[in-house]
Length: 363
Image (cartoon, rainbow, N blue to C red; front, side):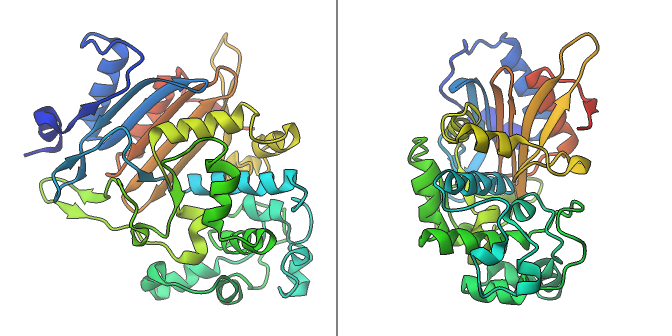
């Protein structure tokens, strides 16, 4: 039985509509066409400001337990974790405990001095540190690293202390190893595990009661939509695991409604100071539209004003996430999936929901 037939037989759940749930509603028809065409398995949310206008859940949360995806199902959000971590960094900047342009040697005095005095937090969270990707190099030789548990300081020494391959700040290099150092700094300065820090600085003030931090499925996350490599013709799970010393880069799980709270609470300017909000949205690496922990893109259409959009998306295991917000209108699209859809279809659908043109102006 194929995925869309499962949906039609009752494994689709529609919840929390602010728009009329009529079969002829154009938005609903557009979403259902996308679901049928892409075999989407997850939650679609559109909203404006802090209000969800349309939420619908599709497909299977746990095949063995015969559970369908619900509006409050939790999903790992991949690299959107890096955006969250950058927000946590900026919250500590606002508290006067961190500075983006201070050498990391200030916070990790035991780190190697020759590179530690050149690299800053801004370099790390904008992927411009110049560090080699020691973790990925090691994982190619030993894939079991993705499941290991290791003290943070030991991970820094083993994976994140290599010789610089370029001058910090001179170019973009999407490098997961940067985030081992970021996690070490956050936990050192705060005296708290990162999960507690994120809870205190972001989840609690934004009332994100269904979000948290975990080392993949090893964290036993309740109400988690399980990841699948395929649902048909062959059912195949894809278990997501993550080292404990890298949860800042991929350990964030959330729901569609909590992701809307995060986007609105941060981008409306209520959680961060004006200076920190500006820093979060300022492009540091123009060659990739990369700011701090996420991307900011400008979309242009002939005869229309440019549209600036915070375009955060992530991948981890079977999970695929889109969390885009038009900064002018406050319109937001959240897509959470536990069965990776075709990216071209996913992003075309997102742009369509926001009324954007595919052609972008490179910043």
